[in-house]
View 1 (cartoon, rainbow, N blue to C red):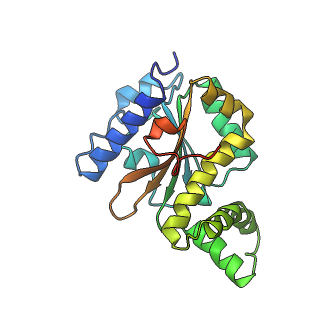
View 2 (cartoon, rainbow, N blue to C red):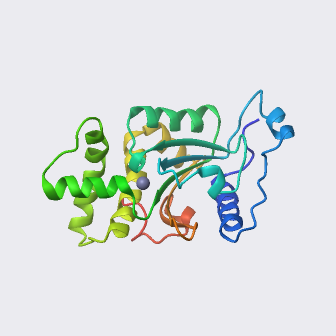
Length: 216
Ligand SMILES: [Zn+2]
C-alpha cells in the first residue's frame, strides 16, 4: 500500500522531525530490527528529498526519520540532471510518494563555486563544470533581483530548483496539478539545524507567500 497520507501531512511529518532534531529530542523512529524487517519486501517512503550532497545535510538525521521513510537523491548544489528527474519520477509515480522536497543550505559550496567561476571567468576543471552550469541561471536571477549575499542567492537557487523540477518533468507537474503530490523548497541552516520553507507548489502548501513561492 502506498502511504495513505497527502502532501500536507507528509510536510507536517518532516517539520515535526526537524523540530525534534533542532531541540535535541530526536526519537530516531523506524531504525530498529523490526522496521528493517517490515520494509524489507517493499518501500513506501512519504517524502522524496532532492538535497545538496553536503556532508552536514544527512536527510534521515535532520528530519529524525528512519528506514523506508525518505527517498533521497543528492547532488552537489541539488542540481537536477536526467538521472535525478528519473529518480524523482520513480518515487512519485511508482512508489506513490506524496511530497518532493528540494533541500539546500546556507553557505552552499556549489553555489559559492559557481559564483567564483562566473566572477573570475574561469570554468572549473572536469565534471564540476556541469554543477556550476546548473547553478548559473540562479546567479543570473539573483543578480536581476539585486540579491548578492550568498544565503539570499541560495534561497533563489532552491526556488529555481523547484521550478526546474516542474518545468523539466511533465510527469511530476501532472501529479502536482492532480493534487497527489506537492513540491517544497527548504533552506537548512548548518549551525542551527533548522529548515525554513522558501518555495512551494502549490504555493499554499508551504505557507509561503507568492513573492517567495514559485512563479507562474
Ligand atoms: Zn551545498
